[in-house]
Amino acid sequence: MTEKLIKSVERVKNHGEVFTPKRIVNLMLNQPEITAKIDNLSATFLEPSAGEGAFLVEILKQKIRIANDQSCNIKEFDTNALIALSTLYGIEYLEDNVEMLVMNMITTFIEEYTKIVIQQYKGQVNKKVAKSAKVIINANMAQGDTLKRVSSDGKPIIFSEWKTVSGRKWNVQRTEYTFDAIVNGDAPNDNVQGYLKGKSEQLDLFSIDDDQIVDDENVTQYLPVKWVDIYQQRVG
Ligand SMILES: C[S@@+](CC[C@H](N)C(=O)[O-])C[C@H]1O[C@@H](n2cnc3c(N)ncnc32)[C@H](O)[C@@H]1O
Image (cartoon, rainbow, N blue to C red; front, side, top):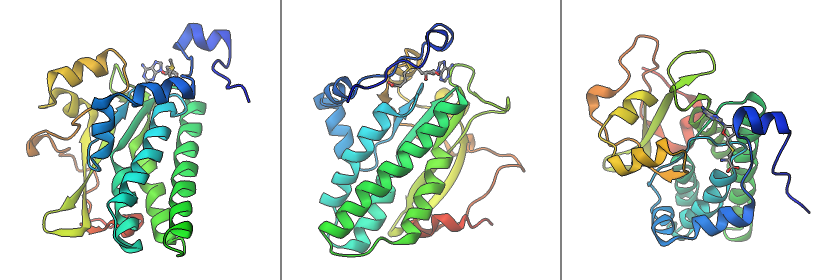
């Protein structure tokens, strides 16, 4: 089946919207520096003009395989699959593309996760994992303008960091940062360059200081929970 790479001439003119063919995506992801990052379960990726998620979807598939390689049992795989997912971020300007992006990420996660649970572990899909995956995807895929760093409502784009609690491998702490703080933070210059050029590039997104955590009464303060309980969105 031929891939549809262009939706309309107007959209190409107005938004530079040309989707990357899957063959090219895989060719690009197959570079040694990128595969090394994909193999690192906690390495973060940002697709800054994500379209419908051409790169993120393929990275997700590969990262879920890595999550499985690093798991000894189904409980560990449940957690590792969510850790893998939590490292993927996207920003897209157009509403219909964001809807497709979110749907593609959810569908891919559920399909790849289910395949491994059934075929390898002869187990059952954990509904908590599926519900937590949806919360992560909705938090990590933003509709907005990457260059202006604002959401569609004009407010700053906010991303969540999902960090395993030190010494407690099943637990995660969710912390919110503005995208502005992330870009202006300690992220290595090379990576910031990559983002400005609009490449899909691995960023060490959250290598920033604690004082750059969003400090605003409107920002939710999340309690540490088990990875599979992220869907509860427990706040302090
Ligand atoms: C060349 S397409 C690439 C889409 C996807 N990364 C891919 O490879 O298939 C560029 C995408 O960036 C979006 N876009 C354009 N300007 C943007 C901006 N300032 N912020 C975020 N997204 C933007 C467009 O709507 C379009 O979907």
